[in-house]
Length: 393
Image (cartoon, rainbow, N blue to C red; front, side, top):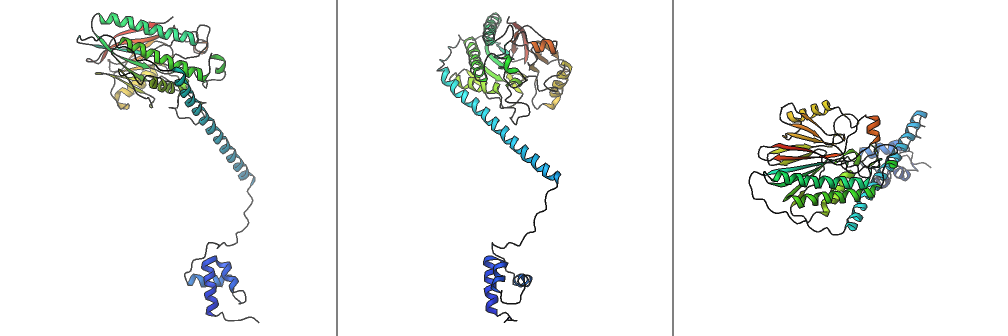
């Protein structure tokens, strides 16, 4: 026998089940009464009751993807897997470099402080500026390798010391700015086959270049009363390929600088700060200049001299938010100088310690004898007073 009227008590039980477990549970309470699920749903809506967490209406079966959509889904899944693998490779590279830094510090051992030179109390001092760039540490050519690099770099330090003594016959030179210009190591990720044109691994490059930077700074500290290092990183310090998701500032050059900086942390006469930006600032009294590697301008790291000068002129006219007089550039392994539009500043391009680069000679028809740059600056007038191209071969 089917009942035609639902007692209030039964509706109350159904409402309690609706609130607890949803529409299906409420309808089960009313199973022996002639009432549809829609009627139960409308009743609960009129009572403004909220169904419980188990309220799930039956869903229609999903439509099958078209072949194009299925292919897109597979491509997206593949891209996501590749991205995860690339990130894992990047994390491994950064971790390896960090571990290399730790081991290199341990292997280096304690570095004693450098004795200060005698004080020069004369007036009108000038500042020495060493622009040292593009060592390409570990690059192997018919006339260049890691040992030749060290010999040539230290030869520059000795020549810079002797030239400084000549300058001191006229005026004091108490302070030195060392501008490390990038590409201090050859790297391993810049072109196919690069692994066959080096004489040491990334780890060995890291250790050897860092220790050489330390030796350069120590040589300067033995010559000048105070030393400041301004360090720029180059394209050969890039980690991974250009397509890898690695920040530009995660750079092997920058890592060698940080290791050297930490090894020399006890030198009270040394100022050396980190270099997170890709263009650095040099300031000595009233003299202000920019230090860039050179790959920042142009396409694929190459630009003509006129393009470089035009770019710098735009910076000088206000595009760069810091007033400067000169710009120091490396990257091209040549020594050049171009005047700027204001008739005062210059773009100074400095050579490399490397020699017999077959790619530069064959593909770019460009080669130069190894050299680095030494300037002397009047900090009051804010300009360069003497320039030297220091030959290293």
